[in-house]
Amino acid sequence: MTAYTGGPMTLAGWRYPVVVDLAGLSVGDHSRPIFLGHQQDVDDVVGQTDRIEIVEGQLVASGDVLGDSPRVQRVVALADKGFRWQASIGAQARKVDFLKAGQSAVVNGRAFDGPLNIARQSVLGEISFVPLGADTQTSALIANQPQPHSDKELPMEFTQWLNDGGFDPDTLSDEQRATLQASFDAQSSTTTVVDPPGDGEGDGDDPVSNLRASAAGELRRQSRILEICGSAHQAIAAQAIEEAWDETKTELEVLRASRPSSPTPGGTTDKAPDHSVLIATACRAAGMTEQRAVEQFGAQVIEASDRFRGIGFQEFCEIASGRCLPRYRQDATGWLQAAFSTMSLPGILSNVAHKMLLDGFNYVEDAWRQVCKIGSVNDFKEHTRYRLTDDMKFQPVGKGGELKHGKLGEESFTQKADTFGIMFSLERKDIINDDLGAFAAIPQALGMGSAEAIAEAVFELLLSNPGSFFSVGNKNYLTGVDTALSIDSLTAAELTFLEQTKPNGRPLSVAPRTLFVPPALKVLAQQLMNTTAINETTTANKPKVASNPHAGKFSVVTSAYLSNAAISGGSNKAWYLFADPNRVPAIEVAFLNGKQTPTVERADADFSTLGVQFRGYIDFGVKEQDHRGAVKVKGEA
Image (cartoon, rainbow, N blue to C red; front, top):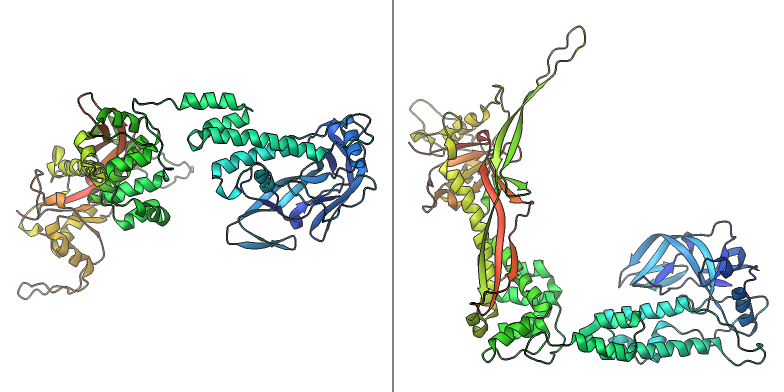
């Protein structure tokens, strides 16, 4: 028998055809069981092989019929009557390569184009007699039956099966194709051979014709179910096909599901576009840049959204909900109920709000991230942070060889998260104004507000100097006329930082990493970091070194919050040195469960609000930690 021709096979559970690379197929000792229909039961054992070999890119096997069960006897009887059994291999794939569309590969001496799965390494388990195989070119003959000629009729393939049922393969959606493919596979794998009627002599009942008649009837049933359900009730269609419902039961279920969920009846519009296209349309209407839009959605989605440019909010909702809505001015309540009773529109609007919220969140300055540690808490209770202090210096080992124990201590710092948020509404006037961009701009502004809330909390804490965090007593504060930003003052600040000690009096051994300045000092700070030669005025008879000792030493970070007049304690002269916040954090910003971005949710509007409400919130806390992680320089007396 020709068990496998080396070509592509359409298999259940695989989206694309599969080709078994015979060069990587392990056949063992050439003695493999031969089953009926891959059923590994004793009554389905047809026999076993005594020879398996690869001939001209095909898997060829021969063996003996050993089974004597009634099922095997039927196989032999049908073969004697001229039924052309096909062969099918059962193998375990160990390594599979996917050949993408546009790619090609040579397997089994033949060239194949993607998309395609290639089983590079596999193990042959068994070979089966089947009425209709995945590889339709195979053949399985018993005793001395003549070889089939290539000009004879071959078993029906999936495309022919679709055409016989009145389906156009080129117009099927992915969901419809998957449903029909599953049905076709189920029929192919579960069809069994039946006893020939009568005494078997002169009987004209063709089993292939019976199989096709059964398949045609099943296909007509499925076609009618798909026609009744349409694109709006694909879940009902799948259940009806799977559970063998008749037309009457299917129609009843569709009628139940089609009961209006709002008081306003309406027909359906054309098929709604992909949700990502609509979300991209709204984000672009709100002013999201083309570059950011492409990064968020991809060029293909952005191109597809071009045809919706300029649409109003009401038309957007109608397309997203997939139904014709009543006129809002005539029936505002009915419009809202009809629009938001669908599954798609609320989700799409929530997605738009979330995207624009994050877009606004990322617009706001976040310089604080360069100097603050990012932490996480799992609830809203006050949490205590501990930092180990140590006396782990190696000590001399005595003559007895005994090692002394090191000593660990700890310092504690507290942290607590709170919720910050705000509500916003899609109100009646917004819908009447029919401005899609105006709706999407609201969550964008909220996103900016949430980022500002974090930034302001950080700088209000930093500039308020809680508990004399920056002080002479903590050895992290410099003041005086000579502390204005310069090479000398930077040298003094670095020295102060490097002289910080552990609680045991030993050096902390942590160097500053970031020079944190207000906008007024940004250019000077960059010059100090980028200039290697200096030209400063010198005192008489006291020349200065011409090289800059701090060039490239620190990372310059600037924030407008440091000198903002609305925040108490701001200054355009004061500046800071910060350590790596992951080494010695001066300030920690902790987020609930580590979620650093705001959340947006849709909520039912109050009775007094004729519209839809959304809420945005974020959970975080800001707290000072170790004073040794930063030095403040006042920059003036």
